[in-house]
Length: 291
Image 1 (cartoon, rainbow, N blue to C red):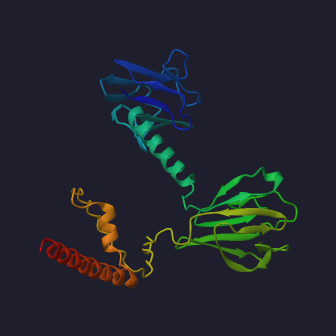
Image 2: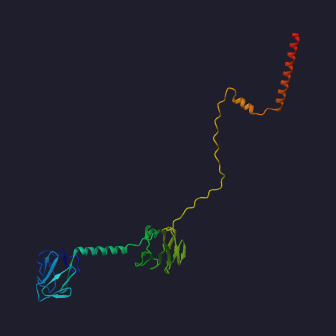
Image 3: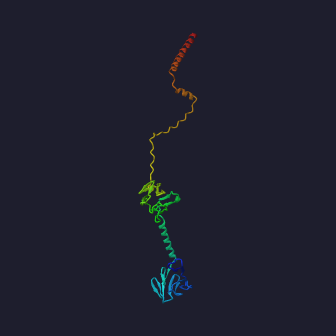
């Protein structure tokens, strides 16, 4: 369903309902227009679904449709403009108009949304309540309302400094300010700024928040070099000692494995000789006795 409204007033529209609506100065009309050239009921719009026909009921006072004078009837379509005296009307399709408004709002929102760069300034001054300022690719800091970051500080220049991001790196440039731009306590005209640095514009101090220098690079961690240590082989498992037999005992085996002193060997030999001589004497004595 279509509508008709005043061109300069989007919120005062009338639905074009079947079978028709009337337009004129009289309060009985669906759309009341206030112009000296308008009659009480000056025109009507015949409605057949979305097919519209405009009829001028006062042929002596033409109605202008899209710049053409109409004294009788003509077809109307969305976006057609109708004029009578100083009054301007327009036929609209609410669905299409709502879509256009939504697209325009989306475009405005997109333009107002700052580009995400990963860089920002965090205020260290108590007057700014630790506020964080996201940075676009190019930012002007100063006292003027036209600056991207406007700060109401008495000794700050109107356009104090510029912050620019080039290839992911942040640079600061002093714009000939009266009281200077300072990076980590040192006054600079132009310098590269890194994450964790401190920027000061006159008496306002900010901490720099941003990505690391090599955030786009993938680092490969080197394996630690092992020192040269001689290889230690594991000891073989000891075999279990066999169960000692009756003929041998652990003590004898141990004694037999120990070396005997030389004096003990000599004494043993003389003992054997003595026993042999003694045996010979005894045997000889027995033989002589029997004879």
